[in-house]
Length: 523
Image (cartoon, rainbow, N blue to C red; front, side):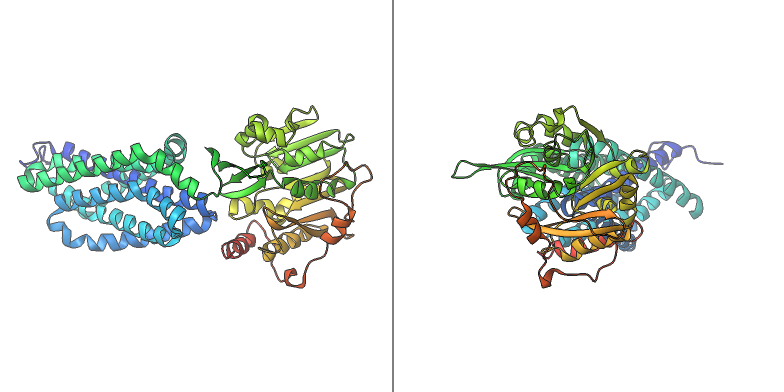
């Protein structure tokens, strides 16, 4: 018959004692997975390339879990104290991990080495939990190894499911990266230490019990104090990443939006927009970028214009300068970017309140998915997407994506794509150009100098085999930068910039991520 009570020192029925330990397993597993996801997400936000970040974190942590499991074998003789110490260390390290890595990125430029160290330590501590918990379960009631492993892993895997869902849908949007990790650290400490110390309190000496409770209190004090200071730390760390004072900072489900503002001695303000740390425009010279992007594409038919990306409304402003544009459709993923472009005073002034024009229709969705379901056609399509430094954005520079754009073009229509820097990232630039050709377009690449960006490139394309003429329409409005002479010069690339030995970018083989990472990270 199954025992109805546990060992006398537990003073709990065996079923209740086991349920309490399995509840600790459940909670610790949830916390462990949150730490993993937090490290992956932080790397994606700070340095891009989510696949690489996930690969580093998960492979290092899984390896470290094996190391931790082996390292825990000598500790099974004193599993209660060992487990309490492991959980205290895991709660402290896991809770502070995001903050520490943010600091390493902002001030020390040691993000990747710090990530590997933190991922290894967190993984080793997670790996040490399982053998110690197994020993504790067997102390309550002996059972065969298969049943014990099944019970423990069932609680562990269900906990991982809850943690995996809680991170993106609750912790990240409500508390953010730093505070979310700190809060999970507190939960980890309470569940992992308090439950075990309370349940097995009579199986350890009074001095050890006092020391362990004191240690848990210290961990909770550190995490709680850091939680109170987290906002100030985040402001300081974020400001360290930007040259100019931050005027606005906002985290959305899609990206981090930063606006900086600086006033030069001349009195001219310099407003800059950054998405996930990448500069999108400077108010001082954005007209150079947007005039060069828009007006060559609108030298042909332009009754119906489609803008993919460009949520700041600056490309839209240039499109609406043509009176014969009947409609302009803008597809932007992040609704918060549209809201800022409409309501943030200085951005709305820059785009001349373009979104208030009755010819404009805005759609907030993923451009790739939207194009798949699109049945209408457009005379001109302007692709103004962020740089493809991870898989999520690289799909918007793929053969498949340009095939969808081609299907949405009316006969005689033109497409233009912002294509990065042919100087700082020549392989990336020519990869985009080659990918567009692979999708059935003839191309005319060109580039100009945008001081805040450097040498910046574009690709004008039309379906077929005849290259489009790079020109301005007779009806082109007065421009501040671009004219026919500038366009003629823009087609000339120096010998050192003609990198044609590149592969095309596809959904299955996102070569562009590799090119971008290798080139921009070396600048």
